Image (tube, rainbow, N blue to C red; front, side, top):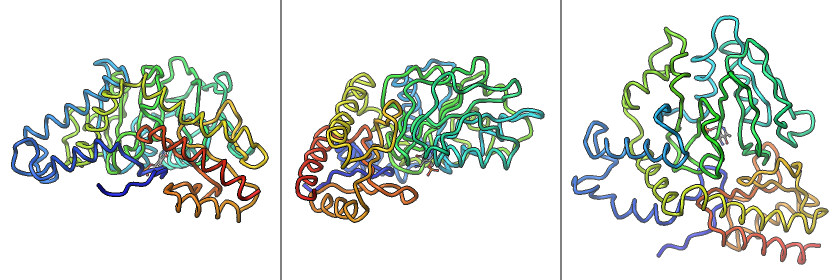
Length: 362
Ligand code: PMP
C-alpha cells in the first residue's frame, strides 16, 4: 500500500481512499467493456449510465426535484462568473452581488464586462472578516439575480444563513462547500461548483439550474455559452470530461454510503470543532481572522505570531505528514481545508500537532 499523507490542499483536494481504489480496480476494464472509461465514447451506453447516474445522485443527495437540471460543464467555476450574466442580464437589469472575498470579486468583475453589476454588500474594507447577515442584502427592483459565494475558500468565511431575495433568483457559487452540510438547496435558482474540492477531480463544473430560470435565458447567445444548450443535450452537446464525471459519480456514491448529508455534516462539524477549539484555547497564538459567526467549516484560516513561525509551522507539519496547510498566496498564513473526504483523524492529528508546535515554539 502506498504511503498516503493527510492532504489539506484547498483544491484539487483529497479524495476518499475508497474512490481511488475503485478507480484503480476499474481502470483497465470498465464494467466489462474491455476498455477504461478514459477511452470510452461519450455516446456509449456505459458512459450514459455514468452521466445520468451522476446527475441523479446530485439531485438525490441535495434533495432537489425534477424541476432542476444538472449540467456538467467545463472551463472551471470561473467560466460561470461570465456565463451567469451572459444568460440572465437583460436590458435595463443589473446583476446584484455580495462581495465576500477573492472569488466573489472576480464574479463582479466579469459581470461588469458583460453588463452592469451592483455590489449591495461588501466586507472588503474590513479584510473580508465576515459574510452578510440575512437582512444586510437587499436587492433593487431591477435585479436580474442575486449572486453569493456560500464559502470563501481563500479568506475562510461561510454563510450560515442565506439572504432571501424574494422573487429575485438566488444564484450561488458553492465551489468549496457543496454537499458539505444539510441546507435547503431548493432556495437556489442556480448553483455552480468546480468539482475539485468536495465532488471529485478538477475538469468539470457542476451547474444546477431550476427550470424557471432556464426559461428566462436571453435569446441569441453563442451556443456553447447558453445553459439551454447543455440542458437540452443532457450535457452531451460537446465532448464532456468523461473521467472527471465518472469520479464525481463515485464520490457521490461514497457520500451516500456515509449516510448522506446528515452524516457528512456531523463529520464536518467534528472536524472543524477540533481545530477551532484549539484556536480558541490559544487565541493570541493561533489568531483566527474571521468573525466567529462567519467561520468556515471547510477552510479554516489562521495566523501565527509572525511569518517565520508560520513558515516553520508549514515545514514541521509537512515532516509530520500534513501537506497543503499554507494559506492562499494572496493572504498568507495557514489554511486548513477540511473537505468531505478528509477523515476526522486528519483534523484531530493537526489539532494535536498545533498543541505540540505551540509548546515547542512559544
Ligand atoms: N469559486 C470558488 C469559491 C473557488 O474556491 C474557486 C477555486 N478555488 C473558484 C470559484 C474558481 O474555480 P475554477 O478554478 O474551477 O475556475
